[in-house]
Length: 269
Image 1 (spheres, rainbow, N blue to C red):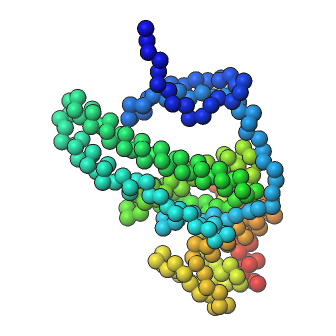
Image 2 (image 1 turned 45 degrees about the horizontal axis):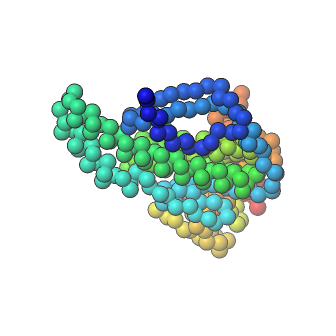
Image 3 (image 1 turned 90 degrees about the horizontal axis):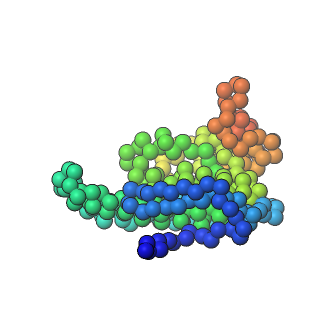
């Protein structure tokens, strides 16, 4: 008689749900997964609120909010880097095609899976909290695929998983009736004074605080988050789209046009 499978459920199925699709898969670490697609009546739009937040992503801190809150970067890959390097060295020494090499390959895959699982779990908890607390969430439209070409920052950017964060934020906002606004990447959020609207000159990455001519001293990341929130509100008021990658007939993204207009209006104050 076959023994029952030792199944660990990630969550119970919704009451009365009938899966329309069942997919069985195995990952590189040798783990089997059964994914079931079904309607969840428990996912409903949340009550509308006036709360809005600007979100600036980074490496020293994973997120900085316009409220001044800073969320630490857990750096999951760095925590397991020594263990991963040891496993990879052991793999490199195994003879190709041998059973020992296959075993060593699975060990490397298990470490990668552990890093990925912890990162995804943290992002899920964080994005769910932000979506539940805020009606409008404003982020920056970063091209992560281009940024990881920087060899000195590629590993840290990949570990931060900014693309995954944005993807989770957007689909959860769609589930719960929230709005995500992506501000054009060329908007000078870090150099624009959130108090008077003056635009500072070139600012190297190592400069974390700066003082405007009006006397206001800014934390670079908090200031950027505040400016993103203000720009996002301007876009929302103008009725612009929330996806900057969609081009207008003139070749410029709708959000970019609106944000540049908002910047000009702010600079005149």
